[in-house]
Image 1 (cartoon, rainbow, N blue to C red):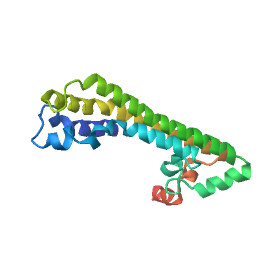
Image 2 (image 1 turned 180 degrees about the vertical axis):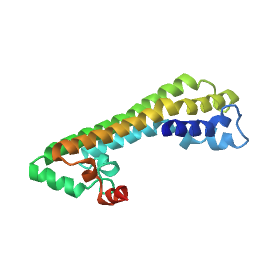
Image 3 (image 1 turned 60 degrees about the vertical axis):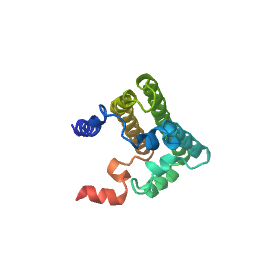
Image 4 (image 1 turned 45 degrees about the vertical axis):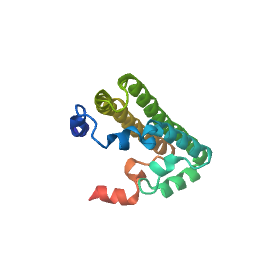
Length: 184
């Protein structure tokens, strides 16, 4: 229900842009701006950055999901070491990093395909503006929602791996500050 409400508010906030034409400053700010022309490459660059971080030995997944603000990493690491599962967990953490990279690559490919399919008019025209609004509207259910579900799935997989290797419950895995807030 909450997800439907968020999607509805998001779609409503862009609904007025679908039928409007370019304003007087849009040629300078949008049409001829080289920084905006390459925006579609951002998810692919993020995917590459995630994979490079894995190769450098500090996966981004540690920054986003497996960090002391969310999880009791000290407790988890101690149990993993005592059980001799620390290398197995690092391998699974690396797999989660690859899944995160795949999420960004999914976003990049879908963004490219949608743009090629929807945006066919020359930049700066009224039809282009309408197509851009339609692209934005369609990208939420086709790109944003699946990407969010993929990231939630990665977090679930990470939790299942931690639970399976340590035997800790979700409440025991959470960072102490979050666990205290949940008890209140």
